Image 1 (tube, rainbow, N blue to C red):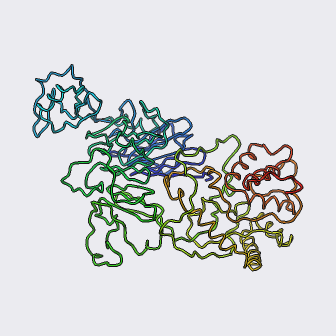
Image 2 (image 1 turned 45 degrees about the horizontal axis):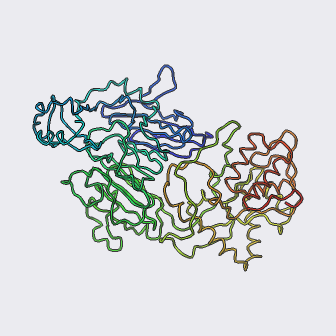
Image 3 (image 1 turned 90 degrees about the horizontal axis):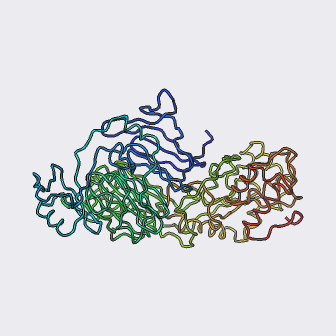
Length: 631
C-alpha cells in the first residue's frame, strides 16, 4: 500500500516490479528443469522459500528491470551496474564465476594441441582427448562452428593459423544449495564493456545489453545461435559483443526460447531457429547464426516476442506476426477478415511476416503487442481521448518524502513530438465541451501520460473570471472536503455555461488540434514498456486545458507551522482559490519539482509557496516571472 509501481515484468513463475523510488519488488518462485529453486526471504530461519505471494524488496537504486523465463535483471543508470538473479542453468546471469551452470567449455591453445590426437566422433564431428570440438577460433578472434568438422578439416584450420580449439565439457550436476545462492542479486560481469549502457533486456533464456553508439552484448542459451555470435554452443556464460548489430545498434532486444530479435531505426533483425525468424525458411533449414534484417516490413515502432512467435507494431498502427501459430496466437484465422473463407480451418505457422486482418482492428491504432508462451495481447487505440486519470498525477499520491532520491530517467528516452498523424487515425474526432473528471489538489490538468485512455475528448474548461466568487468557492470547497461528486457536478455546470458563451470562438477545433499533436512521433515509438515515472523534457509537457486563475486577490501564505504539500490545507478563501488554480495549471515536471521542494522544506523562506508557484507557472509559459501584484 502506498507504493507507486512504474514498471512490471514477469517470467514463467515470478513477477517483478519497479517502484518510483528505484526499489525492486519480487514475488513468485524460480524453477529449472529439476523443479523449484525457490525465492529469497527476509526470515532468518527461512532465508529461501519454495514460493511466496508476498512482494518483497530485493534491490534498491534501480531504473530498469527485465525478466526472462527463469531469471531477472535490474539496471542502475546512476552506478552503471547490472544485477541478475534466478536460474543460471544456461549462463543467462552472465556472472564470471559460472556458478549454477552445469554446461561448460574448455579452450585449448594451438601450441598445446597434438594434431594426431584429433579423432572422428561417431555421428559426425571431431574429438580431442574424448571431448568434442565445437568451435575453432581463428587468428582474427572470430569463431567458426566446428561441430560437424571432420578431423582433417580441423587440422587444416590449425595449419592456416587458428589459435584455439573450444571443447565441450561433459555436463556436471549443480547442487541445489549452489543454485539457491543465486536467488539474491548478483552483479553481472561486464568485462570489456566500455560504452555507456542504455538498457537491459531478456529473452526466455538469454540476456542482452544495449550500449550507446555500439553493438550490443549477449549471453545465455545458444543451442540455436540465439545470442547471434555466428556459432552454436550450449551456453555463452558471459557477455559477448554481437558484432553483426554494430552498424545500427539496437534500441530493443529480446526473443523467445529458440529465436531472438532486435529493433533499431525502424528495422527488425532476427536470428536463431530458422522457421521462427520470419525469413520464409522451413524446419529443414539450419539456424540463422547472425542477426539478419527482416525484409518487407514497413517502419516498425515496437517488437515483442512470445515463446515461439514474434509481433511487430508498425508506425501506421498495424501488427505483423510470424512464427508458431498452433494455438491461434498469430490471429491468422481468418487470414482476411473481409473474406473469411478459412475461418474454421486449423491455424498454421507463419514463415514470413503476416499483417493481422481483423474487423476489431480496422479502425484502431495498435500501440503495442506482446505475447506469452502460447497467447498474444494487443493494446489498441480507437482515436478517442479520455480525461485525466487521477492515479497518474503525482498530486493524487504524494510519493516523495524528504530525503528520498528522485527517480532516474531511463537512458532510452522519448524524443520531441512530431506533428503528423499515424495513418490509421480516424478523422473528425468528436470533441465534447464537458469537463474532465475533477480530483482536486491541482490534478485536473491533462498531460501526455494520461493520453492512452480510450474515451471521448473532454477538454477541461476551468475556473474563469466570468464565474462568481461564490460558485468558485463552493466548487473548491467541495473538492477540499472530499466531495468529489459535488465538485464534478459544479465544475461541469460552469463549463457548460462557458461553452455556450464561447460557441463561436473556435476553441473546439483548437482543442482537437492540440490534443492530436500529442499522439504522434516518439510517444508511439520505443521504448514503450519499462518507462520510469520521471519528468519528461519540457517540450513534451503540455497542459491542454486546465483551470485558469480567477479575478480574486493574491494568494495568502498558510498559517505558521502549516505546509502546503498537494491540496490546499488551510482555511479556504479567495486567495487560496487562486493558489489552487495556479497549482492546477502547472505541467507535470514543474509540479513534481514543486512537491520535492515542499517536502524538503525549501518554501519556508521569503515568498513561500506562492512565489514558487509563480516561478514554475512562468517557466511553463516561457515568460518572465510576474510580481506578486501583477500575477
